[in-house]
Length: 202
Ligand code: OGA
Ligand code: MN
Image (cartoon, rainbow, N blue to C red; front, side):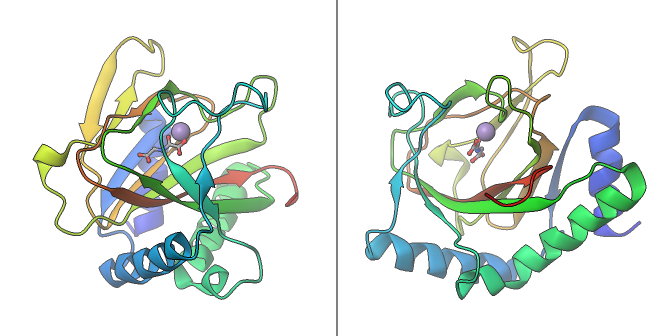
């Protein structure tokens, strides 16, 4: 099985996949350098949740800052995004998911912050079908926390497993099905996260 097959097999079985080594480790250093550059340039903004502009910024609920990968920018040409476009094509060919676009952002959680349990689809909107997170943290210690916690598809109260956000680890899950949370981190936590969508790019 190739890497896409392993991920797709796991998605079919349980709605989520965690893989180490599916993408080249070198990409993590390159993407982290790009993320840090954007951070230093002041290009990050607070993460929001839901569609209500008044209620969407609560660092106690969602504590990261994000920077969108702008289409046409230098970093948008990174091989990681091509890899995702090919993955999207494979999902469309095999399952007719009708994934027509993708969007990604860098995310930085400062010490002490996380993201409470949620689904990645806004109420009444289901264009985000598949969620992707690639972790960029070299030398992350388990004691630093910041795990991705996944909950049961059939019972959001039931935690299934936790994953440490180590560099090279790739999480893929069905956006509308898998409740998940980011547990508070005790070090700065970097990732590139995004969605495969059924609409055209906004
Ligand atoms: C998100 C999210 C998980 C992670 O950005 O919506 O749930 O492990 N991220 O960073
Ligand atoms: Mn999420």
